[in-house]
Image (cartoon, rainbow, N blue to C red; front, side):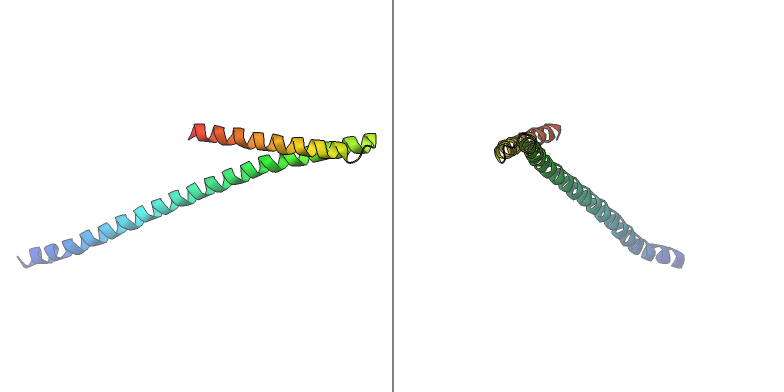
Amino acid sequence: MENKKNNSSKNPSDVIDRVDEIKSKESLIRTSENIEKRGNSLGLAFRLSTELVSGIVVGGVMGWSIDKWLGTQPWFLLIFFILGIAAGIINVIKTAKNMNNES
């Protein structure tokens, strides 16, 4: 009889320990999911900013090269810089739409 009392007195603490263990594992899973979501969001932000900047840089370099070749500075630089901005914005919009459709 005394043995049964010892076993029954251990059971509530075992259950509490088990519940605490499960809660800690659950919080680790939630934390890792949040980190993954933040990482994905950061990656998408870098991707969109790269799309915009690359369009501007390519347009600027093309305009500068044509101006240097033809000696018509700064006209082609300005034209292609503006076209690069427009292309960058269009690429960002397309990429954002594709990402929105995927999710």
